Amino acid sequence: MLAGKTVAVTGAGRGIGRALAIECGRQGAAVVVNDFGGSLSGEGSDQGPAAEVAAEIMAAGGRAIANTASVADEAGAASIVDDAIRAFGRIDAVVNNAGVSRDGMFHKMSLADWRAVIDVHLNGSFLLSRATAPHFREQGGGAFVHMTSTSGLIGNVGQSNYSAAKMAIVGLSNSIALDMRRFGVRSNCVAPFAWSRMTESIPAETDAARERVERLKTMTPDKVAPLVAFLCSDAAADVNGQVFCVRKNEIFLFSPSRPVRSVHRAEGWTPETIASDFLPAVKPSLHPLQVSADVFAWDPI
Image (tube, rainbow, N blue to C red; front, side, top):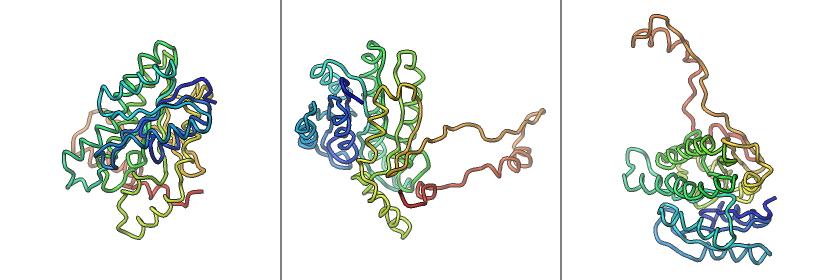
């Protein structure tokens, strides 16, 4: 489905990113395998993971190059696009998968941990997408796939930085879809359920949390890859501005945020009438405070 296309996948040296890059290569794409090679918290660097995945794709008969730049660096993000053009002559899809994790309760969250996660997930997605946009515009088409998370879409304890970044990515993706649709450019999000270094950091201090972790371990990264490859292909030409979720053999389409109830008062509102009239009217429609495991409470199938 991706024959003749060039796809850049960030954070592709391990876990979900590795599975995405290998699947894109299997589908015929030339792949720019980007991975800074840092630790889960974003420290250090290692050129090995990206090179190993690129070698694996080539050993299977595909085309691939390794890029070890940091997506959080403007020049580094641009180098991913430059490498794609130099090696393969074009770029057709970008998969913004790179990320780091620095979990902690909100009241203990340091500014350094906040900034580190926002910088890679959100700013990295912006920088690479922005560097790619002129090429997509010039060639009259292209696809962005951004990895979001149910930590942002629904919620999780101890992940305020990660949740904020992943929810912001949904807004970024939707804006890209709106701004660039006239150039034939698509932008979609995927929230993956898969066991990886990122999910290994999820706190598991209760029986319910430990049970959730055991469910996650049955969801392997390769289950996410087919949807991402599809979204990069021409078969997804009519799919734009959407949010999907993959959970083992299940694929979900998420609803966008839209009004669910309204109350009109001709004479306007006061704090008192909001309390006496508005709140009772909308209270049955207020959503409960939940974490991801509350919504996806059944075993993955």
